[in-house]
Length: 171
Image 1 (cartoon, rainbow, N blue to C red):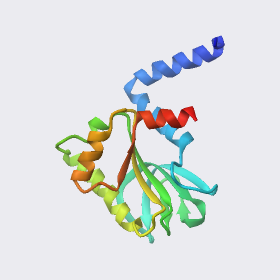
Image 2: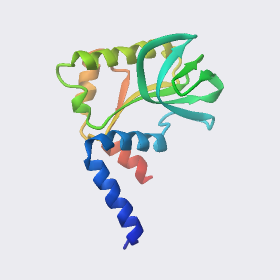
Image 3: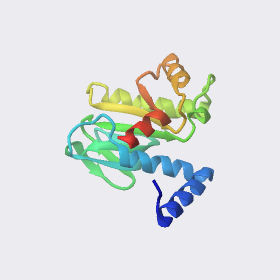
Image 4: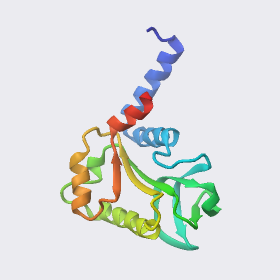
């Protein structure tokens, strides 16, 4: 199959942008926005990016998620800066181009603070099985990182790796 000159130029630009580290995170977030939500069912979902989470009108933390897919029926307020969810029906996603920089055998203090924030949000929403927590990465081999999360009491966080992302794109 031969692609057009226009398509090849777009492909080359995307490849060049991807090789620039600052762009890879944005590219991953863009891919996640287009492929998600991953487990939520129904059609009344939207997403927000880099938004602080409020639960029962209380700010959970100054940390945020890269992307949150949510059911529009269960959102009390949403702005560019924050989202206030009154029922747990969403996907809370942290994007890491290479999860190895975020999780290792010895979890850094900075990463632990972020993981503890994710756990705090999980504890608010865990009574509902329609809430899912993800770290999404381009890295293909993710089994060791799943084990590290489980060994540090973060087993509720699912990891979607590069192979799974590719499979979703191929569908």
